[in-house]
Length: 175
Length: 142
Image (cartoon, rainbow over all chains, first blue to last red; front, side):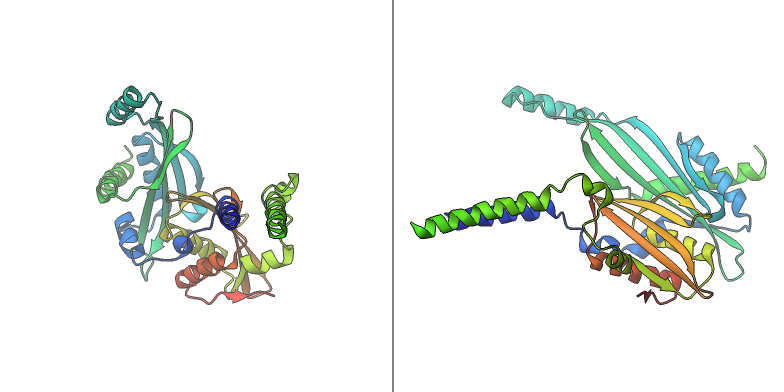
Protein backbone atom coordinates (compact mmCIF):
# COMPACT_ATOMS: atom_id res chain seq x y z
CA UNK A 1 0.00 0.00 0.00
CA UNK A 2 2.67 2.48 1.06
CA UNK A 3 4.93 1.32 -1.71
CA UNK A 4 2.12 2.21 -4.07
CA UNK A 5 1.81 5.65 -2.47
CA UNK A 6 5.50 6.27 -3.02
CA UNK A 7 5.27 5.13 -6.62
CA UNK A 8 2.28 7.38 -7.24
CA UNK A 9 4.08 10.33 -5.61
CA UNK A 10 7.11 9.67 -7.77
CA UNK A 11 4.96 9.53 -10.89
CA UNK A 12 3.31 12.81 -9.96
CA UNK A 13 6.75 14.30 -9.41
CA UNK A 14 7.92 13.15 -12.81
CA UNK A 15 4.76 14.22 -14.59
CA UNK A 16 4.43 17.54 -12.82
CA UNK A 17 7.98 18.78 -12.71
CA UNK A 18 9.65 17.45 -15.81
CA UNK A 19 7.50 17.80 -18.90
CA UNK A 20 9.98 16.12 -21.21
CA UNK A 21 10.62 17.62 -24.59
CA UNK A 22 9.69 15.04 -27.27
CA UNK A 23 12.87 13.55 -28.74
CA UNK A 24 11.81 14.26 -32.34
CA UNK A 25 11.07 17.95 -31.68
CA UNK A 26 14.44 19.18 -32.96
CA UNK A 27 15.18 16.41 -35.40
CA UNK A 28 14.68 16.36 -39.16
CA UNK A 29 12.09 13.72 -40.00
CA UNK A 30 11.41 11.73 -43.18
CA UNK A 31 8.46 14.09 -43.81
CA UNK A 32 10.71 17.17 -43.72
CA UNK A 33 11.44 17.16 -47.45
CA UNK A 34 7.79 16.65 -48.35
CA UNK A 35 6.73 19.53 -46.11
CA UNK A 36 9.45 21.75 -47.54
CA UNK A 37 8.27 21.03 -51.09
CA UNK A 38 4.66 21.74 -50.16
CA UNK A 39 5.57 25.03 -48.48
CA UNK A 40 8.07 26.33 -51.06
CA UNK A 41 7.85 27.77 -54.58
CA UNK A 42 10.59 29.23 -56.78
CA UNK A 43 10.24 32.39 -58.82
CA UNK A 44 12.43 33.43 -61.77
CA UNK A 45 13.72 36.74 -60.50
CA UNK A 46 16.76 38.07 -58.68
CA UNK A 47 14.81 40.81 -56.96
CA UNK A 48 14.27 39.50 -53.43
CA UNK A 49 12.91 42.83 -52.17
CA UNK A 50 10.20 42.78 -54.84
CA UNK A 51 9.14 39.24 -53.89
CA UNK A 52 9.02 40.25 -50.22
CA UNK A 53 6.98 43.30 -51.00
CA UNK A 54 4.53 41.21 -53.07
CA UNK A 55 4.32 38.73 -50.18
CA UNK A 56 3.55 41.49 -47.68
CA UNK A 57 0.83 42.81 -50.01
CA UNK A 58 -0.61 39.30 -50.27
CA UNK A 59 -0.69 38.92 -46.48
CA UNK A 60 -2.67 42.16 -46.37
CA UNK A 61 -4.99 40.82 -49.11
CA UNK A 62 -5.65 37.85 -46.83
CA UNK A 63 -6.40 40.06 -43.83
CA UNK A 64 -3.14 39.55 -41.96
CA UNK A 65 -1.37 42.30 -40.05
CA UNK A 66 2.40 42.42 -40.40
CA UNK A 67 3.92 41.89 -36.95
CA UNK A 68 7.58 41.52 -37.74
CA UNK A 69 9.88 41.77 -40.74
CA UNK A 70 13.57 41.76 -41.55
CA UNK A 71 14.31 42.56 -45.18
CA UNK A 72 18.02 41.73 -44.85
CA UNK A 73 17.09 38.14 -44.08
CA UNK A 74 14.01 37.90 -46.28
CA UNK A 75 11.49 37.48 -43.49
CA UNK A 76 7.91 38.57 -42.76
CA UNK A 77 5.52 37.47 -40.00
CA UNK A 78 1.80 38.21 -40.24
CA UNK A 79 -0.96 37.38 -37.78
CA UNK A 80 -4.73 37.71 -37.67
CA UNK A 81 -7.28 37.17 -34.92
CA UNK A 82 -10.55 35.57 -35.95
CA UNK A 83 -13.65 34.03 -34.47
CA UNK A 84 -13.38 30.25 -33.89
CA UNK A 85 -16.98 29.43 -33.03
CA UNK A 86 -17.96 26.06 -34.45
CA UNK A 87 -21.68 25.21 -34.73
CA UNK A 88 -21.13 21.47 -34.30
CA UNK A 89 -19.11 22.00 -31.15
CA UNK A 90 -21.83 24.21 -29.64
CA UNK A 91 -24.52 21.61 -30.38
CA UNK A 92 -22.32 19.01 -28.67
CA UNK A 93 -21.76 21.25 -25.64
CA UNK A 94 -25.50 21.97 -25.33
CA UNK A 95 -26.28 18.24 -25.48
CA UNK A 96 -23.67 17.48 -22.81
CA UNK A 97 -25.04 20.31 -20.65
CA UNK A 98 -28.61 19.02 -21.04
CA UNK A 99 -27.65 15.44 -20.20
CA UNK A 100 -25.10 15.92 -17.44
CA UNK A 101 -25.53 19.49 -16.28
CA UNK A 102 -21.87 20.32 -16.80
CA UNK A 103 -20.78 23.23 -18.92
CA UNK A 104 -18.23 22.29 -21.55
CA UNK A 105 -15.98 25.03 -22.87
CA UNK A 106 -16.20 25.56 -26.65
CA UNK A 107 -13.77 27.24 -29.01
CA UNK A 108 -14.09 31.00 -29.03
CA UNK A 109 -11.26 32.80 -30.80
CA UNK A 110 -8.20 31.95 -32.81
CA UNK A 111 -4.96 33.50 -33.91
CA UNK A 112 -3.47 32.57 -37.25
CA UNK A 113 0.19 33.16 -37.94
CA UNK A 114 1.83 33.18 -41.35
CA UNK A 115 5.59 33.26 -41.67
CA UNK A 116 7.24 33.94 -45.02
CA UNK A 117 10.95 33.42 -45.59
CA UNK A 118 12.64 34.08 -48.92
CA UNK A 119 16.13 33.27 -50.08
CA UNK A 120 18.11 33.40 -53.34
CA UNK A 121 18.24 29.96 -54.90
CA UNK A 122 20.09 28.10 -57.63
CA UNK A 123 23.72 27.99 -58.72
CA UNK A 124 23.55 31.42 -60.32
CA UNK A 125 21.31 32.69 -57.50
CA UNK A 126 18.89 33.66 -60.25
CA UNK A 127 15.77 32.39 -58.51
CA UNK A 128 14.01 33.39 -55.31
CA UNK A 129 12.62 30.64 -53.12
CA UNK A 130 9.58 31.56 -51.02
CA UNK A 131 8.63 29.37 -48.10
CA UNK A 132 5.50 29.95 -46.08
CA UNK A 133 4.38 28.24 -42.86
CA UNK A 134 1.06 28.66 -41.07
CA UNK A 135 0.16 28.11 -37.43
CA UNK A 136 -3.12 28.26 -35.56
CA UNK A 137 -3.80 28.83 -31.86
CA UNK A 138 -7.37 28.44 -30.59
CA UNK A 139 -8.75 29.66 -27.26
CA UNK A 140 -11.97 28.35 -25.72
CA UNK A 141 -14.65 30.14 -23.70
CA UNK A 142 -12.59 29.61 -20.52
CA UNK A 143 -9.65 31.38 -22.17
CA UNK A 144 -7.60 28.21 -22.27
CA UNK A 145 -5.62 27.25 -25.34
CA UNK A 146 -7.54 24.34 -26.84
CA UNK A 147 -5.56 23.82 -30.05
CA UNK A 148 -2.05 24.77 -31.12
CA UNK A 149 -0.90 23.37 -34.40
CA UNK A 150 0.95 23.82 -37.63
CA UNK A 151 -1.36 23.78 -40.66
CA UNK A 152 -0.39 21.05 -43.09
CA UNK A 153 -3.26 20.80 -45.59
CA UNK A 154 -1.73 21.00 -49.11
CA UNK A 155 -4.77 22.97 -50.41
CA UNK A 156 -3.90 25.93 -48.14
CA UNK A 157 -0.43 26.16 -49.59
CA UNK A 158 -1.58 25.68 -53.19
CA UNK A 159 -4.04 28.52 -52.86
CA UNK A 160 -1.50 30.72 -51.14
CA UNK A 161 1.03 30.31 -53.94
CA UNK A 162 -1.50 30.81 -56.72
CA UNK A 163 -2.40 34.08 -54.99
CA UNK A 164 1.27 34.93 -54.63
CA UNK A 165 1.81 34.53 -58.39
CA UNK A 166 -1.01 37.01 -58.94
CA UNK A 167 0.42 39.36 -56.36
CA UNK A 168 3.83 39.24 -58.06
CA UNK A 169 2.17 40.06 -61.38
CA UNK A 170 0.32 42.99 -59.81
CA UNK A 171 3.54 44.14 -58.16
CA UNK A 172 5.32 44.09 -61.54
CA UNK A 173 2.47 46.09 -63.08
CA UNK A 174 2.49 48.52 -60.17
CA UNK A 175 -1.18 47.92 -59.34
CA UNK B 1 5.60 -1.12 13.71
CA UNK B 2 9.13 -0.01 12.92
CA UNK B 3 8.77 -0.72 9.22
CA UNK B 4 5.57 1.30 9.17
CA UNK B 5 7.29 4.25 10.84
CA UNK B 6 10.23 3.87 8.47
CA UNK B 7 7.99 4.04 5.45
CA UNK B 8 6.16 7.01 6.96
CA UNK B 9 9.49 8.86 7.19
CA UNK B 10 10.25 7.98 3.61
CA UNK B 11 6.94 9.42 2.46
CA UNK B 12 7.53 12.64 4.44
CA UNK B 13 11.07 12.88 3.08
CA UNK B 14 9.82 12.36 -0.44
CA UNK B 15 7.11 14.99 0.00
CA UNK B 16 9.69 17.51 1.28
CA UNK B 17 11.94 16.61 -1.64
CA UNK B 18 9.06 17.14 -4.07
CA UNK B 19 8.24 20.54 -2.64
CA UNK B 20 11.88 21.57 -2.82
CA UNK B 21 12.21 20.25 -6.35
CA UNK B 22 9.06 21.79 -7.78
CA UNK B 23 8.49 25.11 -6.15
CA UNK B 24 11.70 26.99 -6.48
CA UNK B 25 11.30 30.59 -5.45
CA UNK B 26 11.59 33.99 -7.08
CA UNK B 27 14.97 32.85 -8.41
CA UNK B 28 13.06 31.49 -11.43
CA UNK B 29 13.65 34.77 -13.16
CA UNK B 30 17.36 34.13 -13.19
CA UNK B 31 17.18 30.34 -13.70
CA UNK B 32 20.32 30.11 -11.60
CA UNK B 33 20.02 26.41 -10.83
CA UNK B 34 22.22 25.35 -13.75
CA UNK B 35 25.88 26.24 -14.08
CA UNK B 36 26.40 29.09 -16.52
CA UNK B 37 29.50 27.53 -18.06
CA UNK B 38 27.87 24.14 -18.42
CA UNK B 39 24.77 25.63 -20.02
CA UNK B 40 26.81 27.59 -22.55
CA UNK B 41 28.76 24.52 -23.54
CA UNK B 42 25.51 22.55 -24.08
CA UNK B 43 23.91 25.33 -26.09
CA UNK B 44 26.84 26.53 -28.20
CA UNK B 45 28.71 25.20 -31.23
CA UNK B 46 31.29 26.78 -33.54
CA UNK B 47 31.12 26.65 -37.33
CA UNK B 48 33.99 27.38 -39.74
CA UNK B 49 32.43 30.35 -41.49
CA UNK B 50 32.39 34.12 -41.13
CA UNK B 51 29.31 34.68 -43.29
CA UNK B 52 26.76 36.05 -40.81
CA UNK B 53 23.94 36.44 -43.27
CA UNK B 54 24.31 32.95 -44.70
CA UNK B 55 24.46 31.49 -41.17
CA UNK B 56 21.30 33.32 -40.11
CA UNK B 57 19.47 32.35 -43.29
CA UNK B 58 20.47 28.71 -42.80
CA UNK B 59 19.32 28.84 -39.17
CA UNK B 60 15.94 30.15 -40.36
CA UNK B 61 15.65 27.50 -43.09
CA UNK B 62 16.52 24.76 -40.58
CA UNK B 63 13.96 26.07 -38.10
CA UNK B 64 11.34 26.02 -40.86
CA UNK B 65 12.36 22.46 -41.73
CA UNK B 66 11.82 21.54 -38.08
CA UNK B 67 8.28 22.97 -38.21
CA UNK B 68 8.92 26.31 -36.50
CA UNK B 69 7.36 29.64 -37.32
CA UNK B 70 9.88 32.48 -37.02
CA UNK B 71 8.64 35.03 -34.45
CA UNK B 72 11.40 37.54 -34.84
CA UNK B 73 14.69 37.95 -36.72
CA UNK B 74 17.36 40.62 -36.50
CA UNK B 75 20.30 40.64 -38.90
CA UNK B 76 22.24 43.34 -37.03
CA UNK B 77 21.97 41.71 -33.62
CA UNK B 78 22.22 38.23 -35.13
CA UNK B 79 19.24 36.64 -33.42
CA UNK B 80 16.30 34.53 -34.56
CA UNK B 81 13.42 33.51 -32.29
CA UNK B 82 10.91 30.87 -33.36
CA UNK B 83 7.99 28.85 -31.99
CA UNK B 84 6.88 25.33 -32.81
CA UNK B 85 3.29 24.39 -32.06
CA UNK B 86 2.54 20.70 -32.26
CA UNK B 87 0.20 20.10 -29.32
CA UNK B 88 3.14 21.41 -27.28
CA UNK B 89 4.75 24.84 -27.51
CA UNK B 90 8.50 24.92 -28.01
CA UNK B 91 10.23 28.28 -28.25
CA UNK B 92 13.85 28.76 -29.25
CA UNK B 93 16.19 31.69 -29.66
CA UNK B 94 19.27 31.31 -31.82
CA UNK B 95 22.01 33.90 -31.62
CA UNK B 96 25.24 34.08 -33.58
CA UNK B 97 28.48 35.94 -32.98
CA UNK B 98 31.94 35.86 -34.49
CA UNK B 99 34.67 33.80 -32.84
CA UNK B 100 38.20 34.71 -33.83
CA UNK B 101 38.96 35.36 -37.50
CA UNK B 102 37.50 32.25 -39.04
CA UNK B 103 34.59 31.00 -36.95
CA UNK B 104 31.04 31.83 -35.97
CA UNK B 105 29.48 30.78 -32.69
CA UNK B 106 25.87 29.63 -32.82
CA UNK B 107 24.00 29.48 -29.55
CA UNK B 108 20.47 28.22 -29.07
CA UNK B 109 18.30 28.14 -25.97
CA UNK B 110 15.00 26.31 -25.76
CA UNK B 111 11.89 26.70 -23.68
CA UNK B 112 9.49 23.76 -23.63
CA UNK B 113 6.01 24.82 -22.49
CA UNK B 114 6.96 26.86 -19.39
CA UNK B 115 10.28 25.22 -18.59
CA UNK B 116 13.84 25.85 -19.74
CA UNK B 117 15.44 22.90 -21.52
CA UNK B 118 18.72 21.93 -19.81
CA UNK B 119 19.03 18.41 -21.18
CA UNK B 120 21.94 18.32 -23.70
CA UNK B 121 20.24 15.81 -26.06
CA UNK B 122 17.70 18.15 -27.72
CA UNK B 123 20.50 20.65 -28.36
CA UNK B 124 22.66 17.96 -29.96
CA UNK B 125 19.74 17.07 -32.21
CA UNK B 126 19.26 20.69 -33.20
CA UNK B 127 22.91 21.10 -34.14
CA UNK B 128 22.84 17.83 -36.10
CA UNK B 129 19.93 19.29 -38.11
CA UNK B 130 21.74 22.61 -38.53
CA UNK B 131 24.94 20.90 -39.73
CA UNK B 132 23.01 19.44 -42.65
CA UNK B 133 21.83 22.88 -43.73
CA UNK B 134 25.22 24.54 -43.20
CA UNK B 135 27.19 21.75 -44.93
CA UNK B 136 29.67 22.31 -42.09
CA UNK B 137 30.49 20.42 -38.91
CA UNK B 138 29.30 21.82 -35.59
CA UNK B 139 32.29 21.95 -33.27
CA UNK B 140 32.06 21.66 -29.53
CA UNK B 141 33.39 24.77 -27.77
CA UNK B 142 35.30 24.46 -24.49
